[in-house]
Structures are given as structure tokens and as C-alpha cells.
Length: 310
Image 1 (cartoon, one colour):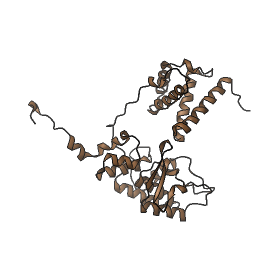
Image 2: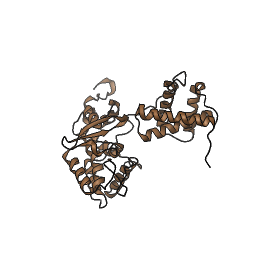
Image 3: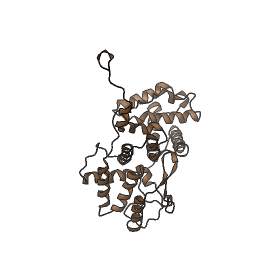
Image 4: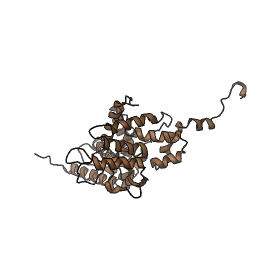
């Protein structure tokens, strides 16, 4: 027996469906981000209106702040909650559903740039992880190629699993990267990466009907749903090499941070690091400024002593 939506429920479903479509076509967000953003929009509507009719023009700043306080009171400390709700409020204002932009009533979460250094592995640690993945007797070629792309080119996990066969220009030695916001970049493929990809394609990739580069090893050889497969591969390699994860949760950004750290230590500028990582904002690259210890020493002021003498 299926549940019949009420008029209010139908209106909410249509609103959320249109919001989802907006996030896909206008904002170009990742499926994971869209899922969480729509989910918090639904929770916000449920908190304010319950099962009743949705009266968007009656929304006020107190409703927004009240919802955020309600979420935080439940023990959630995720800083992205306000971001998800802010996107929804901007959408409502943009389509004329609210008279004012209620997103302005949400203060931005303070970012402590000096809270910690970027989590990374030493160059030796990265090479040990790659060697461990390559030696996997079951599907080492695939796992090694995936980790190598992140370690050498700085791709994100979602970008790795999104690579299509047609994205590789073998003659030009270029790779199209499907980045954030549906933006595409062309990156050079090093001989090392190209060799790893060719071995995977010739010796290990199953007869998949899809055009996705990296697929599962069991029929029907489908693409991966999300980047969690990369996290699992990395976590297994860390365990095999005896390296303890820097945090209980092992994220694929560990290799991306490791690449940036190596570049900084080799003398690369922040602009160069940002270009390699394809950052759209310089603020995203600023976290690596703390790694340039020698550079920081050069701009440090002498510590004053008693009487103002140096």
C-alpha cells in the first residue's frame, strides 16, 4: 500500500525537486553535496511547518536561527549545516519565494587557518602506499593507478572515479579532469601515470559496456557510486605498510595534501600549488603557507626584550 501525499506534502515535494534541479543545473554541485543540501532543506521545512502548508513568505530570521540552534542542540557540530541552509535560503530569495534574503541572517562560520597543519604523508610514506597498492594480487593495477593519479596529479577521489575513457588524449598526453562546479580542466599525464593506466586497461579492466575508466572487478563491471572506494583502498594500504592514519577517518585528500606539501618543501610558490590543485580561490591554498617554515622565518619580527632593546 502506497502513502498518498497530502496537498502540503505534494507542494513540498515539488519545491525540493525544483531545488534539486537547481543545484544540479545552476550550481553544478556534486551528488553528495546535493544530497545533504536537499536533506537539510527538507529538515528546515519540517522544523518550521511540520506537516502543514508551507508558507514561505512568512519565514523570518528567527525561524532560521531557531533551526540551526535545534540542530546544534542535538549534538551535531558539522560546520556545513549553515552552508547547506544558506544555499536553500538564497534559492528561495532568488525565485521570489521570500521578500528578503534570509541567508544574510546566518553568520559565516569562523575558519581557523592556524588550527592545524594539512594532514599529509612523507614522500617515503606515499611511495610505500603506492607500492602496497600495486602489489595487491587481486586488482593491484586498478588500485595503483587510482592512487597514483591522486599522488602525482592531485585529483580528488570523486574526480578519479569520474574519469571517462574519452577524457584521455594519449597522443597529446592530456587528461580532462571533471572538477567541482562542472568545470573541466586539462592536465598533463606524466609517463609514469600513462604507463600505469595502460597496464590497467590492457591487463585488468573487465569488458565493461560503460565508458567510465575505473570500474568494479565483478560483472557487470559498473562505475563506482562515490569516492569511498578510494578511501578504502588508501586505508588498506596504510595498514599494510604499518602507517597509522593521521586521523581515525582516512580521507583521500591525504594524498592531495601530501603532493602540495612536497611542492612547498621543494620551493614551489603558493600560486603554483594552487594551479596544480586547481583551486578557484587563493584562500584554499593558504593552508599550505604554514608548511613553508623558512619562508615564515624570513618575515618574522624579532622578539622584543625588556626596555625595547633588540
